[in-house]
Length: 559
Image 1 (cartoon, rainbow, N blue to C red):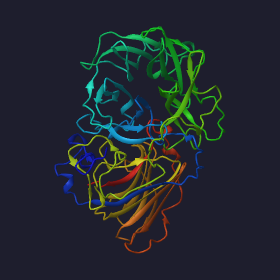
Image 2 (cartoon, helix red, strand yellow):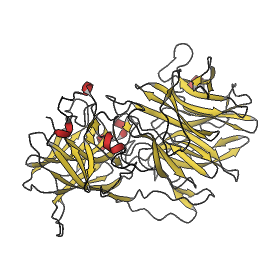
Image 3 (spheres, one colour):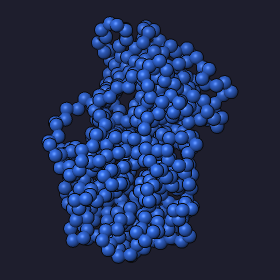
């Protein structure tokens, strides 16, 4: 689903209303405008071709955590978390579970939810998607912006309904439609009584009235703590229930979302339990693996599973690909693996078995996917739903697509603030990659800035671009630094015309380059701005673990 100038871009890059410090003068009337002629992305990794009949993990690379999946006939749909990014809750489509493409976002109207003033790690956590009676359902939690809600759509590409708020606490809800016609929500909440330790959680079941969009009174405790309560298991979360034969299976994560993350399984003869943990738990984890193993994958968990017509089961789950220790700029990504059933219990991997980066793919019809290796947007038409911005739009436009350019009005919200920056970007999907753009910008006053922003959260980002009389690179790695970051590289800039910028990322290192852009002539050589910059402190492990890096055009003016 594509949206043009009258769609989400026309309203998305706007600053929130008075509570965010907007003055009386409309921002559209400001005279500090940055024009971007294109934005390009290219992976610089040398990957061997995948053999025939195989696929490569992750199947949805770059900042796609908490995946949930549903099968509808021959089609598969997935949704992942987006926190306080807008539009939110991307809906991805596939026929083979391997090649995915974005078809829309479930939260794509400012009237649906309000993320104004929220930190990047708040907002939409762990959506779960289902299909029942010809309708798609997503149940989700908006942290610090309303609580638990459900939305529906007849077409997964949208439009999705406005949220219907649900009266229960906790997070990570998922829907289970029983074959007897009832509907249920299973979720993570505080345990009964006082928690015994930090991270002590419980899993609860509550009936859902799907006609009136409300939960029914009363709830049932399914799991208190985790698989082995004597070990004080932490953060039982992300639960899903499936009925397989005469058994109800409860699939849930445990161990926290960092390197101790895992996936566990329980089953019961009755929906309300009691649920017994399987004899082999966890059924997925990498926490006991050697740190020096090749193609290291960490933080595996938060899975959702589907059955194919051939009787095989497959699951999607989140994991990370660190370039060192637990550090990655891409955040948590979506991986795919088959499940093996042994004595009535499913498992993803045996103990000590590494997540394969290349594996045999499902026996399904081939699907057209997305080229995440290389793309270039010339801003000559509608922007795709791959573009996202920070927080919910307000009333005053900061951006437009006109005459083959993306034009940003340099707003007063800095990248490190909780306002609505003039910023739009796309996900980083490779450890080694380059973003390039062409910028036309005439700074009017001290502090005016335009260029590329590589954003993890409001306390962790890199901004490279043009200020008055100079090129500058700013880095922010902690909350006690200024909201525009600290200057880590700079050089005088005499050129007043268009320039091209390149941000080259390689694991924990970044380099910034520039050159003059002269139409109709061969371009000059790229010139570095300063030396390589250590960006490992921007890794998601230092920024709340939830998000991944988003890179794109950004403009700022202190006013």
